Length: 79
Image 1 (spheres, rainbow, N blue to C red):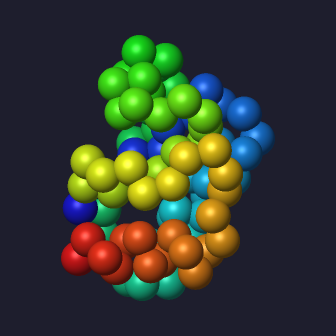
Image 2: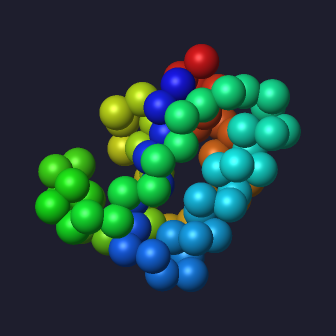
């Protein structure tokens, strides 16, 4: 599983990255997690607001930090 957290490093982006790791631990799922801060790479996902969560190449949410249960749901959908 490949997970990307898109964001330029703001506190909300850091919070999303932390919550992703919490969700993975709660689900006992292994994944490659990458923090993407390059604006051009972020725009390549057609994301206009950050933070954004990408799971297996699919943008799951953008412009907000989802709750832990939502993140777990997004990850579970891709298992």
